[in-house]
Length: 566
Image (cartoon, rainbow, N blue to C red):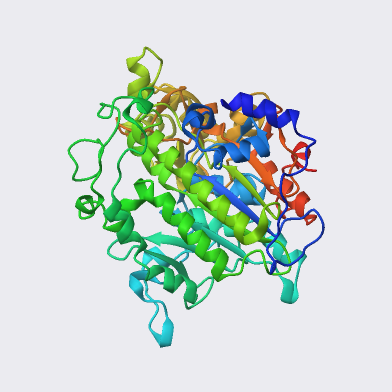
């Protein structure tokens, strides 16, 4: 059955009660209509069209279960740019945009110190579990970048933080974040969570954390890390899960638009993961395979048991981010056979996970939402081969050209500090010493940038608010811009253009292929149906807050998607 048939059936039966409402004997009771556990699932780089494209290959118990029995927002967008992983995860769980929550990119240029800041870096934190050292029995904590992480750069709180504030004392809810990526676990979990865990590959293949949460890994995490999961998954390798004919709508298995693993000659099935480990960071090789999703589900189930999620006396929150989908997109692109295979296997992992939730929490006692942190463009070289406008942009000599032209116009100085995240950062000292105003200088720099091939518009920061009021595309830049942390001139490339290599794809633009993502709700308190009304990522957090009858996150600028709630 196709996606739209499923959606029509969901709309037709929208007044029907849940088919089953069983409840484990040892489960606690929360307020009527509220779930015992909310699961927030972020699927990294999942485009809006993937469910419809791949649904013929999905099981009835994974994505189709959520679409058929839940509520779908079919015109769901990020209302800001740049569309990256860090800002996406932060926006989902804070209910606001980078202009307010402060996570403007995965990393950004710090003009005061002349350095790059990673979105979850924290030099005061220490790794817990890195290189197998967990702090048990007084073992020293490792000083290593992999564990020096926390949500310190996140300026607003999250759904989980508000859940913590709503119920204090012995019945306080538990909040846990899990991902292959540190930022995919830390930002959704918020400031007051009981733990955020991310994957550390190398020679260990373990989940780690930081001293922001605790100084010793919980015993259930130690047990999981000692369970040999990474080795087992590497031993299994990666073969096609479907018959060869099922991949006929994809590009050929070896095509010029996809990249290969390090040390691999061709990007073709089957993949011997053990053979690829040496050239791909040891167990980090799992991150770019379906096994990277499987181990997230395995770890999430261990967390439910180890933390007694769904049994705390108040509704708990489990934030899960599937990162492997992003890695395969960057390497192979959205039309590769690897991408189809990745999502089919993820669908089966979700079916397994949902069935376990039914058994452990009780069908009808949990709620899940599924979304993505951003979309992705078609591979430009592939699009160009079909006659579509697309291309690759590189700053090339832009900085040198800006320096020369601005020296001529305003006098010799070091004018440009940095070009990153589609922004030009001008030197504050040069601006202060210049004979002209910063407004004049910014506008002159933008006039030079827009002459670059592939650059559709270049907007001076001083003009951003006025331009945003009349141009929806620029409005997205406005909501993604934080004064002092973003650039002086913002660049927008032509549609289909990107700053990237010639294979695989990326994201970050204000265009719909990057902003349009799935948004699905399912479970306790959710009305089956769908809407074509435009909704935004900032609306997810207030929707869950309304479901739980708690305060919205403190920086929230979204509104509940009321059609989804009973």
